[in-house]
Image (cartoon, rainbow, N blue to C red):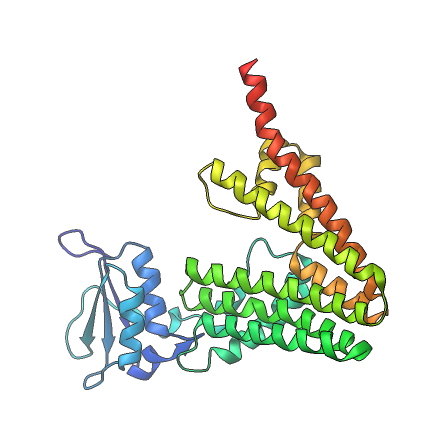
Length: 332
């Protein structure tokens, strides 16, 4: 709808202020509608409320944050509003719909069928808490990681079971901060960096705690396998950082994957990369490691870590050589 000068104006009517303020997954319903209209390049949105009513300050904060450059005005039921208003209640999504849309295209089968359904339930509950932020969920994941590490290093064989189960719980709860961020439109680079740091610390904490637990009980191979894996993973991270610096690009663990996709665009190579992406995802190996520990095979976890580190460093070295070989061929 447009006014006489061509500017796009939308009018949205609510039966009462409470309907407009109703929080859906942590955001006022009216603000969700305004954001969609702002993305559709509406210059102005008129919220039509019954006479004598007004929006709360919390609803206005959401409106100001999500409206962008779109102007938001409050109309009154007794005043003529052009264009004709549409019913706001019909445009508001349910919290379940909002949370279903917070999944990521990169979710693997474990995340899609196990972790994500559970994390969405947790997110739905947390979003009922006023003032909840993604950072609060990230801190919760860090606390869960500390709770995981404690029994691993100090509770003997039962501690292995408790630590492994908490380690499996970590990636489930780790999905909550991203879901809250996407549901409330609060995604940020700093939040993603903090989330990644907590993820890495949790993974290293589990392997370190598992190694200490087994070493204290006389498993001599535990320390050697863990050290081998840590050294190779650290070397791989250093090589990726060095390669990113040479290319003047950002550091990313996906750099290796992207380089192989560019160098080998065929279907077979793509299928192999997708398979390796799934089995190397945190959701997959956290579940696998927990199952191995519960099955009484904790040392097998460290053997897998050492094998994965060896495979990974070979792929990293290969990704560094591939561009150099291409450059040499062009020069020849």
